Image (cartoon, rainbow, N blue to C red):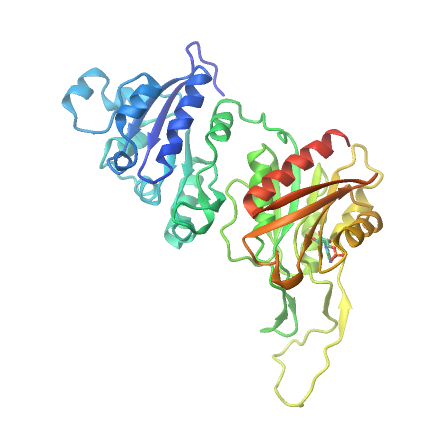
Length: 403
Ligand code: C5P
């Protein structure tokens, strides 16, 4: 961050969304950290929280209108844009992102965003379908290309009652990212994560796949990133939007995922194998689409590479040695099978989940039994995968400290 002779001057833009109430907490955090804070609200934001709330929290008058003669005579909008050392928009709604991406200046906040030369950070918050919409994706890509920093959103329960990526990142984490970039418990660490299913071709149109949505791996990537890590996410075909700020490497098959992981292991500090990698693939996939002729057909399968075991083997003699974390999906004798997998694959931590009766795979919630060498274990209770991922990352940080 640039050196200031004055306390950091942070302009907080609040756009319209239920997460506007969390912006109050953000202003408190920033004030507690000694920042000077000025708040600008869109008209939609005022439907959720009153300017008076932000005025009380920031200790400054709150600006809401572009053409307010009295406010402009105090500090005009250009002076306000110049005043800011940093601009954070929290929450950033889909509409705010759209207007910003297209250079609108139809209210005070969008005008300031055009006028400022300070670094701009967005903390998006919206319904998960709105976040996944191609229009929002395109606006996000455009804004990131222009250097806008994006924090979150995180996945989890939404105010609308649905689950998914769209929750505003926690105010403490936003404040930390703004004021002390690179100070999370995993800052300076490179975390490589595999996520999602693989698709093993039978012929050009058919494949062997599985029910994994990638939700747990994506949530782990977001949680590791929020903890300050540089994250490489090697992912199979997933329908969910990928977390912002991570390096995403798509890989369709077990072989492609294996190659991609090995290509990113050099400076890896933590490897987490959360992908549901196929154990077998068709031994000789057909180059042409298979015809419907015989009444029965046999498909010869061959073993795929065990990415996790291979990573553990390859890093065994390194110093420092990366922490290698695996998952075990079991339908019975969870603890027993997980511990033997921990040992045979040479892992530092294994997170076991019960997948009997449709639990865990492709669902929103899960519980994990985590085991590590020497007999240690911890149960992470049943909860949404985003919260569970944060708890698992906390455990990874603990194990890394003792590594
Ligand atoms: O041996 P099993 O498939 O039960 O082990 C599960 C763990 O191994 C998961 O962490 C999964 O990501 C990883 N795995 C892998 N490559 C495979 C099979 C599983 O990395 N081919």
